[in-house]
Length: 156
Image 1 (cartoon, rainbow, N blue to C red):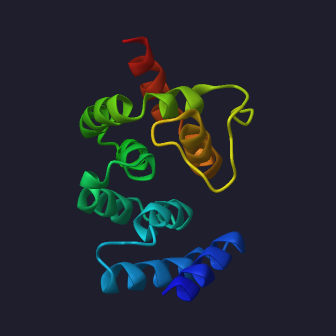
Image 2: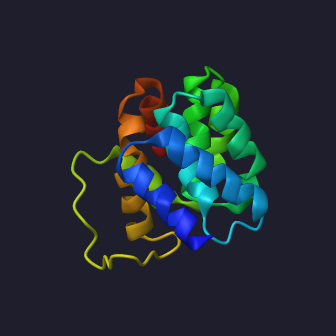
């Protein structure tokens, strides 16, 4: 399973999102506990494949996992689907769980955090916020409505 997961990661690095998605979904189906973290990579594939409805379904299914890859990606997908009411509700929850991610997404510059260690993540820390931005910031930047929603909620 780890080797197969490694192949999915390689596909992601090669921008072969459909191939990566196929593997990640297979791994998730045979290992619903998701010991490899496949559910956190699937949103990237779905953004790249412009499968917003499928992304919303994926995030709903994994809503209890409480990770920015799910919670913030869910917000963005809802905004893209023009479901601003639900997007606002999910953003409040995401910002409560991971406030530093919202701040990171709105920064003009994104320097690496001072205590950044490759391969390590502090849950709720600056490094996790930075990693989310590195992987998903481009999708946020391409959606003015989502950035505006984020700015509005940062002021509340």
